Image (cartoon, rainbow, N blue to C red; front, side, top):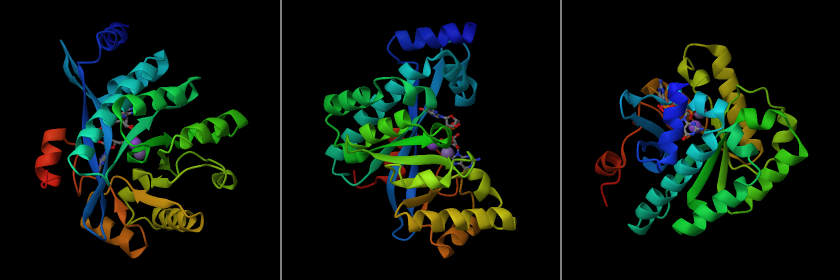
Length: 256
Ligand code: G
Ligand code: G
Ligand code: NA
Ligand code: MN
């Protein structure tokens, strides 16, 4: 309860206890960074650095994720606009959209207003939807996805392969990218089942004309396996951990 109160207070005070780290995404073909995922961190006034696993689930349960998520999208767009203005017009910033956030009635307007306010071109923003959002296929859900997509943003399905979504519906979703869950990538070179699942997702994405990216890539063998099997977009500790903006610029955006 204390933590819940602190979270509420931190959000009420405008969010300056929060900050974002950015984990780059790479194209292993061109060796270029294509964008970055924003990941929220909380510097608690008494407890210090809080890992997201300690407050994201709480934020979800209490509904505070709506306000926190809005803060994340706004900060992501503000940061990406700075990079855009510095000439990095091809990069796409991704923010995670939680199920609660997706279900809030005015999510489309929230995103629309943030885009207008920050002047970030919509195609430079991606929302990562967890597969949980889409397992309960419904008209409302589909309508929300289309409204979001019609803003001109990109959308991906995060942690793909873990959520038992019905593959038959996938073709109806206005999405751009499938993000293969880390759990399959972990032992991709030793576990033939996970290798087969990964290949299936890559093939599926290809036949639906979607992009595919692997998350949680930790070593060269995994990267090589993915390239061999037609997945060139990757994210993971092998390339980079999530970094603060200044560090990301220093290491990966050298031409700034
Ligand atoms: O950032 P990792 O670094 O530790 O994140 C742990 C978990 O918290 C992941 O499941 C990640 O998706 C989630 N997470 C991090 N930032 C956000 C965010 O801004 N919104 C949501 N909904 N989840 C986030
Ligand atoms: O739920 P989501 O897919 O957004 O989770 C992102 C989480 O995964 C963050 O906690 C991020 O720090 C973590 N992560 C990203 N790349 C790797 C990796 O290569 N290995 C491990 N163990 N975690 C990673
Ligand atoms: Na994500
Ligand atoms: Mn994920």
